[in-house]
Amino acid sequence: MPDPRPHLGEPLALDLLNTRWIQDGPQDLLTDVAGLGIWLTSAGLDARAHADEPTLQAVLAARTAIYDVVKHASHAALNEVLDHGRIRRTLTDAGPADIADVPATTWLPGWLAADSLLRILAEAPDRIRQCAHPDCVLFFFDTSKNGTRRWHSMATCGNRTKAARHYAKKA
Image 1: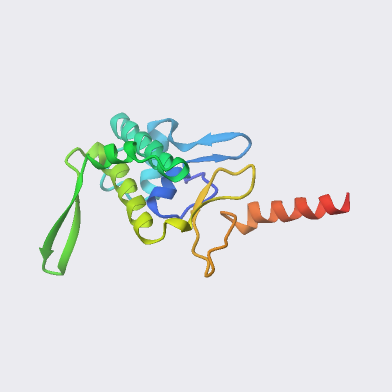
Image 2: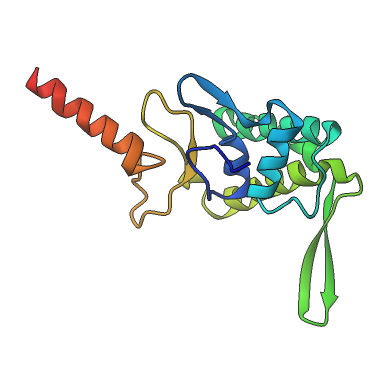
């Protein structure tokens, strides 16, 4: 089954947050193991993790922890997710490498998403945004040159906002 979400392609942490969206009411891809399988495939993690109930629970915990950091600057739950793994530094034939070492594979997808958030926070924390449309709950990483992007998609939320403003002026 294809990924039904309206916005894909964000860094893993934000992509996990975007498993909840509004489309004819609230939607949540992670209500069951089948949805987890869709997300794992879409995120390119299906070869590294199994879609099962323990993995679903771990991913849901990671999604909540990431949300708490992004929306409320609360980091305790994220640190609990990160406690399930570490980065192992090693030297390979190709050179230095950082390898995710997560002993309980059920935590691997959620741990990788939490690690993704750490990288974003280290590089450009001010570029994490939530769509400015009042009916949208999606997140994005602002890659615009001047850092002023407001919508997850200009084609959807941006156009709806501009159209609403236009019609409000005419009324």
